[in-house]
Length: 179
Image 1: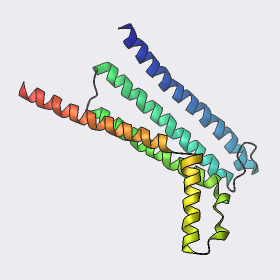
Image 2: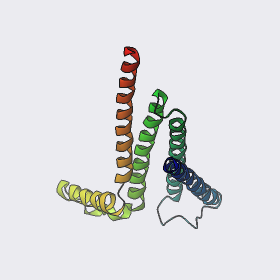
Image 3: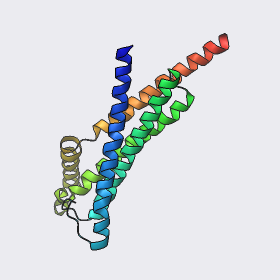
Image 4: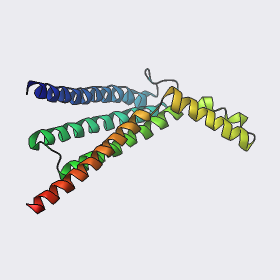
């Protein structure tokens, strides 16, 4: 029983830690985004062509992290209350999956945007050189330098959990109908 409580405490601490760090990052980026809008100069944005877009991507990512953390804590609380996942838990799992895919998409956009100068568009003289350059660019950046596979993996795990919950709810419904 003591081990059960420790695991629940660990899950709650991880969830609240994710919410705390996401909120802190959200405050940080918003705090530096406002002076950029008023003065046109940023002290924290990397050297990108449009720092406003970079800030919006960072703020959007942290808003999504915050939402995922809150949804996972809500899912955990519902599980603790009833001891199993219910039908309304499916909506939470759907949203966590969708938001994880959104995080991956924002990460891809951010990686492309931050490294656009490495695309070398001046070398695009034929279809072969263009496709080779794009393949090299995407392989180097999106697979090796800044992979977004963790978000896709998390979305796949949430989708698999959702499928398991659907099957468990169907079995529960059949058992209740039998009784």
